[in-house]
Length: 193
Image (cartoon, rainbow, N blue to C red; front, side):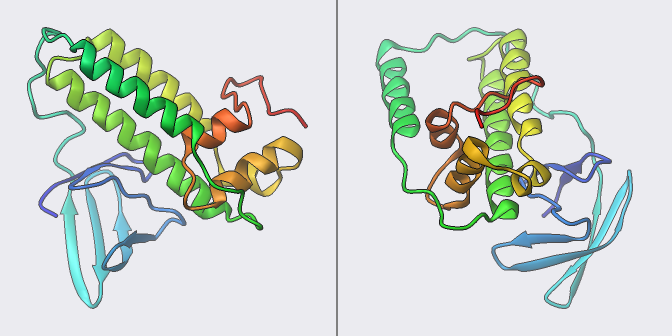
């Protein structure tokens, strides 16, 4: 808890070791309790958890590690392993939940997608991605993130509802559910009714 960077919209960009979300404007769930936020502005976040008060000062929105030029190549073995892992993630999941849990479905999806962007930044800083590759990938991931929200979940029906029911099962991840229900994040697209 020594450093937090966050946007003015309330999304915390970086907090070791994971990304966290302010879901209803003033509560932030941690493994060890609920952080109640009493002040949140462009510079400071004041909060308390389990009777202890914390003050987080915004340090920066910048990445502190000087990125390396794309200089590393990925071996065929690593590419093959990543491909196998992707197939498994896209192809293995559980049954849909019986009831929608929009808050959890959206939060879990956002967390997975945001951590994917953060991993992309690590890969960029380590020299495995170019800045253009990082920008293109981040743009695609953010488009998916922006298309998933509580309002569309609560108003969903047909395949869209099935998609959110899939996400409501905590054993499923966004990759599996998106593949299963042909999720399309483009602004003019929607899942088949």
